[in-house]
Image 1: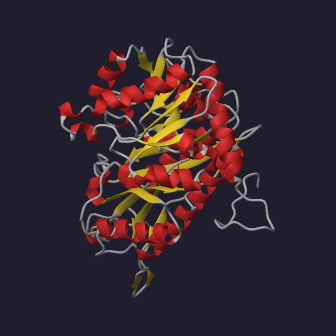
Image 2: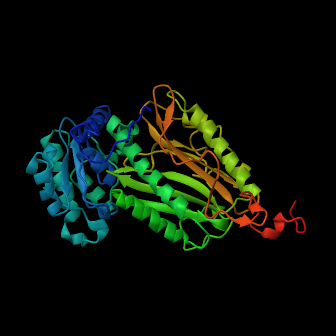
Length: 437
């Protein structure tokens, strides 16, 4: 096995994830991308980009607030302005930020909650412009990932030229370091455990939201930083895929698929598995087989030099599984980079990849997702595997069994022996006197 997984504790008797190396190599990659660009600096309000740049974290409650910001000037070191006392915490516990020198108190507009006349936007712009002038890069464009309109106007009022910088951040994050790959594999191992518990739990009568609660508890007990979401989809909700769980009661013979997204030390998972509860219909079995074939064909092609167009060419067109076009079927036959966010570069989709292919490189980590609806009009199979591109191929880091459709729940016994695991959910369709064969 090329990719090792370790315990999450630090020990003196084994070399595990080297967090100092992680911080250093991430920043070095971003500096190299900045140097190769036309920008004088990068400015970030995005939670994942701030973490990649500064190795700071103040809790997932802040992810959607746009209250924190950090700047990387060309030839300089990152400066972060953080929320209230968080800045003081960084000064005490984040020596790589040189204390008060580069960990400073600051706040953005709270997405407009501050009164527009309070001058917060102008203060943000002034802070950023001061750093750029100190480094002599204020006359060059500044690349920004996400920005609120008042902040954009205030930066322009400071005389700064603001342009899209997200591509620079994502390009730096596209190839993972050895420590990032270890953390991504550890994150998957935690989901392996969650699926083990879920498989034992699934049975008629439990609700989709109970499955979400079970998975969340397992992950948090294992040390997950954040359970970003659990898609729990069952029964007739499987086609079309609604992408959200409900309080539906799971019934005998139901298909059920799940996507588990969580964060381990910032590194995400996107990891589907599909089950049948009690038994599977013939149509559901066949749908799963086809879904798995599309997955295996794609994985077999993954290696350095392959393109995203090569992969998506193996997958069916939207019209082949009931959708009018690729936009309507987006993310059903899909692939995406995984790192500090669940959707990073590269993207695999017939919507864009055939005309704008990206070349796969060693060190990329991405998820491949396939989907196929059954002929009954409501059942569907969904599978997802996360893969690491290696020097001569790839390694799959999602390990819960998925080569064949698993049957969860109680095994039922009849007077003639065990109830078949492949059967129609309506009993009369399985008898000679009914409509069955």
